[in-house]
Length: 164
Image 1 (cartoon, rainbow, N blue to C red):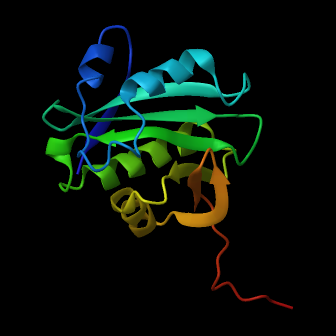
Image 2 (image 1 turned 30 degrees about the vertical axis):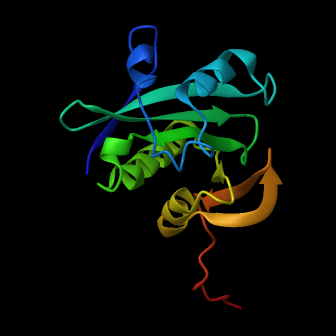
């Protein structure tokens, strides 16, 4: 399944603000407005660069939004935030495709990155299930009241044999 990221700009931000999640998800998911405010406010510190993206499907229909927040002076502080797949588009595989595209973007743009992080509210079972199926693992850490998940970009080869 193909998805395409287009930077959120003054030309397309209003379209992104129309994205909705299921009613039961809304307490757990930051709105596009909140995500876009973070670009200016930088709540995690000035060392982070925030890059918001509208997500389009192969038919050029807006299906979601995602933002990266990265501290490229590290190998570990690469975050996916503000991730939304529109209500009408959920359950079609776009969430998984968008996660893969976001990870590929970070891998390409920041080759020094060793992991990708994200957070999910403990009660947001739909999102947590998606992340876990994709390969993210809960770290046991909590950030801003949410469970931290990590995806290792270069996991150690657990089957490698030590040669002597």
